[in-house]
Image (cartoon, rainbow, N blue to C red):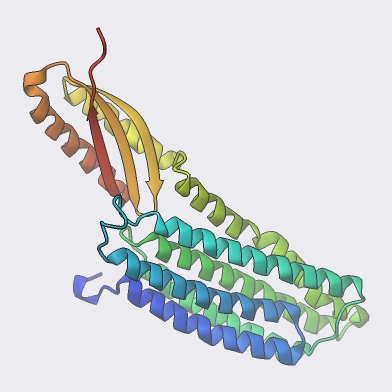
Length: 300
């Protein structure tokens, strides 16, 4: 993509917010008119997505400003906090929807306007698919974690909309069969199946965010590349290097290395060489690398 045609994260989040508003209004209105729990959930999910996108926009703006007096170590930690909030809110929405669907199912089901709901499901599916496809096409290595989380949310919304559409069409077909009496359970059963399957998405988002907030060990891909890079730097420098810590927080990768100097008169040139090697190799991760080289001496 040409640099002048590149759309930044903030603009993409605004586009995402406007799309979420459209689908939220449509979903809530059609869900109330048709009496469908699963469509109400779809509309509620889009509404929650809108609020969370606005939160991402606010976080993106805030992280872009300078405030060293308040955040001596930068604002990277804001990103996993926002992702954790997004995941927690989606989990609450899923929990409420699953509870409502279970109550409807156990109370004998609910009759809804299947034909009206199926038409909405078809339109909603292709709308969500278009937004998700657009965001995926705009994705690139330098995009923020907030934008990546936005893509995941739209992917989930697209798949949910697909499942809703398929279920509504199946329910509509069921009304014209000898088993039409069971059509009243179609809506609640769809919600239970969708919720049970997709609950893993916000759970994984929440787990990943907490791992970053607690500065736990990052992914295997990151760890392997860091270890390989340190080994290469060790082989190219007479100084003894020891990796002591790796942590990924939002867009930043923090790498701590202890340097045990073996030839003090070559220390500064060697450290410069080590930094060049590590920064070159770790640039493949498309993260803001914070490399900390601590000079230590072993007690004799």
